[in-house]
View 1 (tube, rainbow, N blue to C red):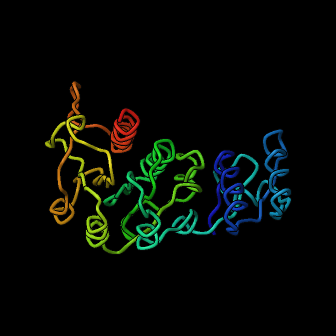
View 2: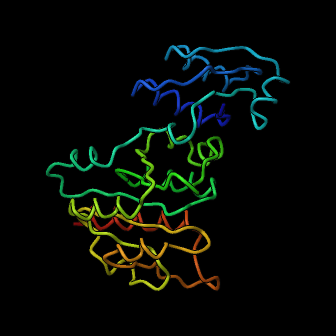
Length: 246
């Protein structure tokens, strides 16, 4: 069993369950503070079962709780699941589309922060590998402020094949790398796929070979690189900026 314990994470998960028919719950309540009571009211409105439990029991099930916890499925299913073929078909005649490919992002805090940026900057789909990928549902949901329940995601055993499908569908693929061309010199309009590599070793060789171009974020600091979640926010902002400007 997995439990969400952050107030924002629980609220967004309940709202998303109502909008797309996903199952979640029960909502476990030990302490009925003002914020918890608001969430209980939301759960009742969405017809999600609310169970009163003792603090000891809740601490056992969800140690990092604030008097309330929501039972959910595994993180790989706790979001609007997507199928790549269906996603490509759904684009139809759209001029702009944006996907983010995460190559073994193992830190759940980074993963959650990336999803939060994806929500803010209009990412259409996040694609990640179904092994060696961050899986801690509660940490991801808290760090993403609940946006994990809204950002469309899919997992695949073969990221290279997924990238090739996107390229066939007309996507231009950019890999993030410190040695790449400056980000703002690239045309990021149209159908774009961005690849972010893992925190330690970057983009894997096979995925790197799939990229049409490598891009970098020009910096002036003493440390040689940005945290991957910060880099994701900068990259996605630049895509949004160029599209609005155009």
